[in-house]
Amino acid sequence: MIRQTGDNIISSLGFTTRENYEAVKAGRSGIVRHANRMGMREPFMASLIDSEWLDDCFAAICDREDEYTPLEKAAILSIYDAAAPTGIDLSGTRTLFLLATTKGNVHLLDGNERRPHPDAAYLWYSARRIAGFFGIRNTSPVISNACISGACAQIESLRQLETGRYDCAVVTGVDMLSKFIISGFLSFKALSSGICRPFDIAHDGLNLGEAAATIIYERTDNTTATGITLIRGDICNDANHISAPSRTGEGCFFALQSVTKDLDTNNIAFINAHGTATIYNDRMEAVAIARAGLDGIPVNGLKGCFGHTLGAAGVLESVISSHALAERIILPTQGFTTRDADSTLQIVDQTDCTEKTYFIKILSGFGGCNAALLFHSSPQETDESGTHRHFRPCIRLYEPESNTLYVHKYCRIADGCASVNGQPVFDGKEAGNGNFLTSLYRSLKTNYPKFFKMDHLSKLGFLASELIFGEDALRFTPRRDIAVICFNRSSSLDTDRAYQDIIRCDEDYFPGPSVFVYTLPNIVTAEIAIRNKIYGETSFHVCERFDATQIAVTANRVFRNENVRYALVAWVEYLGGRYETLMLLIGSVPSETVFSSEKLMELYNDKQHKKYG
Image 1 (cartoon, rainbow, N blue to C red):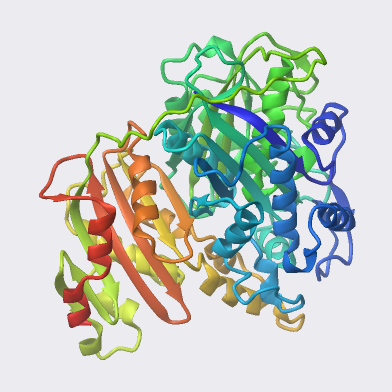
Image 2: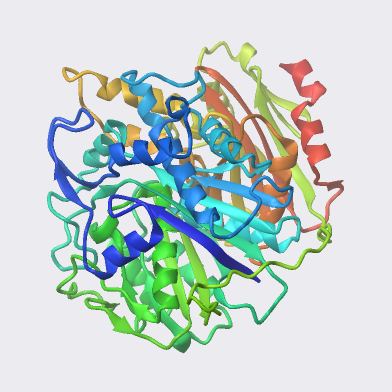
């Protein structure tokens, strides 16, 4: 069993979970109007962390504060507070750290702030700095999967802990606002001029927020242990559009269906929804919940208190909801007064009591990604002072997983050459066209006009998937049994720089949604899912370098999802005109080649491909 043993939230409402939780119970919101902030030319509504208080609190635990960015300080403080009462040795060999963030230190691209290190804008660098502060030895690749990143990190921690390799996992979600992020959401006309109103008939847009939130999960073999348990989670794609929610709520419906399988839904206390207060998101969630037969269950949302905290939302909102369930209450939805006439949802508008012991957390994000988490609460034992007693997990030796995965096909694109299963299929040098990706696209005789709207990273991943699938029967038929898992070093930094150039000068300031949406690296997985009608799991991970072991471990964990039979696993990198990808179709269905980290490294270093290139 995987249980929460420590948590923390840092937001505009406070620097501890207790402060934040009590503020929500009291009906407070941290969203206020800001003018002349972050270089924005117009006022905006947002929930911002008190930067002076952040610096003061960090200075109390570290005398090298100039070496860390605000995002890193917030994450470190959150972990510090979450771990303090648990007694966990964060530097132990059986502790894992997972960081979830949407844009990390993207504000450093504007050049207005000194970079503490040349690599400070890379997501993997932030993870290394945060983990290094505590001496954490084991870090998972950074999860950057748009707004569901925090939920994905919790699902990954569940999978890793269930193997027995680790005893505890520190899951931190963090994002800070900047002109880069705010202008992007403005370009979508998605921001409200007032405090957002989730699921209300008058909902007209979202508010953004800053937060760092941490949950510490521990594994126990004690089936009678008390507290909050993460039972299961699932990730599904809409396979519909890179920025618009599915009108049928396909991905959210599939995720809800998966986490409620074999569960008596009469014992679900509430569903904590994504609830951004944008018309299309709220309607999509309403449709998905109704399709799953859950529209009789109370639904609440927390965006009216914290705003949309991006990659931190999944962790923050899970923490608040967990404490509410432990207290056997259902929190109201701040900003909601009147239900949309088309909705059948039972939106909670005032605090209510419950004796039920489960809740569901759902999130959705750009790239058609959706996630659902199922939590359970049992009474917690307390000591004489009334303080909750944290359990300690049973220790057991790591047992290798028995399932064997196989490589069905692989392709390599690098050095002006594309090869499939080690055989060259395109030589860009002979094509006589300076644009290698366009030349490769035309050589495949693919008719997909959307290709020319993609950023370079998405084009690269898309072309690799075309080479993998070809005329294979796996494609174009709606499927849930295929996952798309991508990795790289630079996230979407190439497109980030292009977007930063657009917003850099007031004279040329014209942010557009068509560029901004591609500043999310997981859009490459969406383009593949949309093209091939893949409704399974899609996610994006960031590593410091090509790490065959990390990639193989993460890919292997995906098959703990019983719906997955195949996975497209890819290292896909594009930065400053340099590109490379290695994509494999792996599966639980037997083939000649066994998938392993050694095999992955062998294919990455394919001398035959380098000979062609």
